[in-house]
Image 1: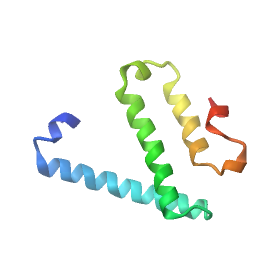
Image 2 (image 1 turned 30 degrees about the vertical axis):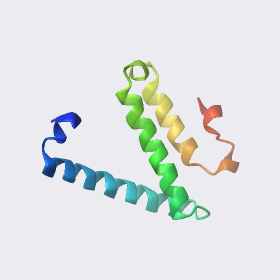
Image 3 (image 1 turned 135 degrees about the vertical axis):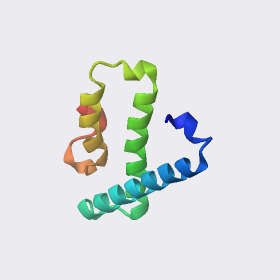
Image 4 (image 1 turned 45 degrees about the vertical axis):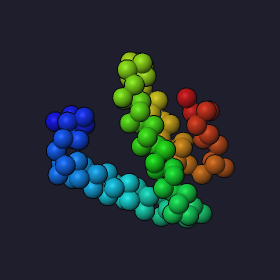
Length: 94
């Protein structure tokens, strides 16, 4: 079943939304446990940003054809989630 087909199956869409919500909640919890200086709202924004980046990267045909997409995303995600003072600014990673 594709994402576009889920709109026609309400219970499937509800299950998918719940899975996404639980995943984001878990990631946010883990991020705030690792980076204690972050508020819950700040951690939520970072988690949302990195999941959005991955989702949009694979949805875009142009970006999806990038030969190093997987490797770049693998390096970029930790940089986005890292402490800003760690010297891993996202633009320096890729």
